[in-house]
Amino acid sequence: MAQSTAASAPTRGHPKGLYLLFTTEMWERMSYYGMRALLVLYMVGATDKGGFGWSQADALRIYGLYTGLVYATPVLGGFLADRYLGQRLSVTLGGILMMLGQFVLAMPGNSETLFFAGLGLLVVGNGFFKPNISTMVGGLYAPGDPRRDGAFTIFYIGINVGAFLASAVCGTLGEKFGWMYGFGSAGVGMGLGVLVFLAFGKRLLGDVGLAPKPVEHKASVAAAPAQALTRQEWDRVIVILVLALFVVFFWAAFEQAGGLMNLYTDAKVDRNVFGFEVPTTWMQAVNPLFIMLLGPIFAEMWTGLGRKSKDPSIPAKMAMGLLLLSFGFVFMLGASKQSEAAGGKAALMWVVAAYFFHTAGELCLSPVGLSMVTKLAPARFASLLMGVWFIANAVANYLAGLIGGYAEKLGEFDLFLAITVATAVAGVVLLAISPFLKRMMHGADETKPMAAEQPASEPQPKMA
Image (tube, rainbow, N blue to C red; front, top):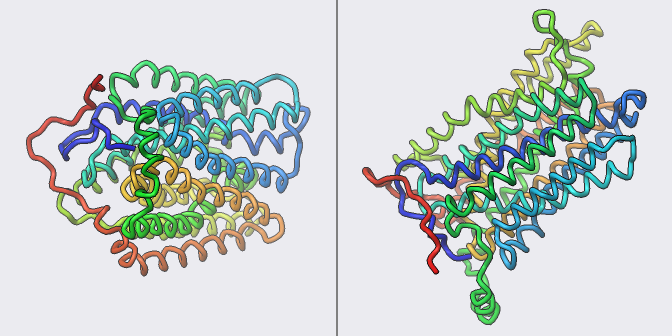
């Protein structure tokens, strides 16, 4: 994948294409998190209220399998985009498939066939969408541009605006008026995302994300022997794979939010606030709300530190994320102790505090990880390696479902304690090896001084 004409020398501000990708991702995440907020509650819901009435363990197992597949299919989607389709067409195709999946889930009747067919469309659609929109964000910036980490944090805010809307709109409609309305509204959100992307993509993205030219493809095939990876490129790929292992620890713990923590909040947390019982699905909006509040702070912090050449290394940032996540689970220990003490319910603020530190950890790890892949991956394998990066999320999400299912055997306190210890140990180990990983990046994470007085870069029209 050749360097895009949209990527330019470091300047202040951000290209407008970033905000188009922000908006598109916002609507897609509304679709995904809308379904995510409802899925487990729908599966365990009483049959006379439109649910399936499945056990908690079965529901969490299916939830883990589904979310795992969601993050596994980007490998294929990334490969097809790099070789044939381009990122832009892949994003459009993925969005349409996910929209159809939500509408299938919204069909009336308690049909298991339709349920799994809808999930299947969402899985395949996400495979085309997820790695490619993230790769396009990186394509807007030249190598060494100090704005890149900040840009991914801004992009990440878009993800969480969508997640907030999902809980407020899809969660409320599904929980209060019927599951089909929740899923249907998620489909409408995805449709809006596709329309926005198609309407403004050509003007704001230039040639970022276009399919590879047939001539270039033939040339690359002919020159295949010359494209074995260099030692430097191998080192960088190894760093991606090593960091992916630690990401498994992070997301396996973090994704308890949609599974075990969701069910725990529903059954064992006092959600009454000034006489109003907060719907369980609304609690899924706490994390994206904190992202929206803290995201701009983190974006400016990373950009400011990069401008001064004081930015922590990528592995160090990710280690900080694991340690903050671990600290967040300490509050879940407090919640479970309180609810067990008198056989009652825990205070809502325990869960809110946990989400606050989980969010801070997420901002240190997730957008930084996306940015890292675009820095380290060889350009001709950018979307493929982004898909490989999401494999870590796939494994973690599957494990999250299995881990959450053990709460019925171990009890919430012991399970939360195990998660707290495991993520803390992973964070300490990653922090210890971060200098070695930084050396293996061969300067790919180093930033260049920013131009003082230049306008923000914009994609140039594609030349005939």
